[in-house]
Length: 208
Image 1 (cartoon, rainbow, N blue to C red):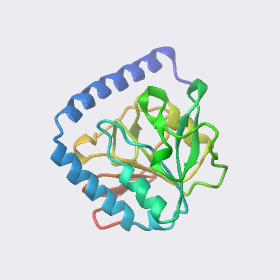
Image 2 (tube, helix red, strand yellow):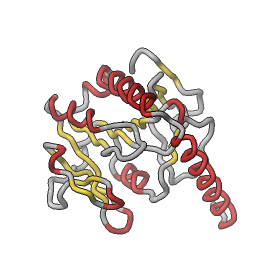
Image 3 (cartoon, rainbow, N blue to C red):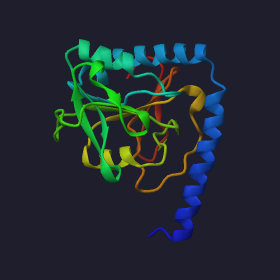
Image 4 (cartoon, one colour):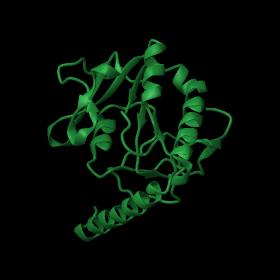
């Protein structure tokens, strides 16, 4: 059982790492981001993980996050079922199907979201979830923005998970507890690393 003191210590460590990552992100150039986005997209599209997925859940990128809009267009063009997040009350998130980026409108915190009455994913509809992060480790530990939307969502919607993270934003360690859902894969512009239980992550530059 985690004590209140330990819990507050963990929260403090996460806040400090988020501040550090905010400073790191501010130093990334537009040229770096564009090239890294291109490389990550290319690696993902060539992967068996992507090719075999019929239903994909993708975050809609904003600000300094790795771009997913091109991936959403790729998935739609390939005839995949595409779902994006819809944030609801009490930090609950749903996966809602879209058929065009034009359906999205600014929602919670200004993040583009689909209409609330759109088709919602059911258990088994998702073959892959592409998840954002503030930072991540190659071993699959992810640090989000702190609201817990994705951790709650993934607990009730089990499927393979992949986190997009610029190489420059990776961390050696990320503070976490049992509520923080680890990622199966962490993809940067240089390599994709697959989480292994009690072992070093397996990283590949060629594909996955």
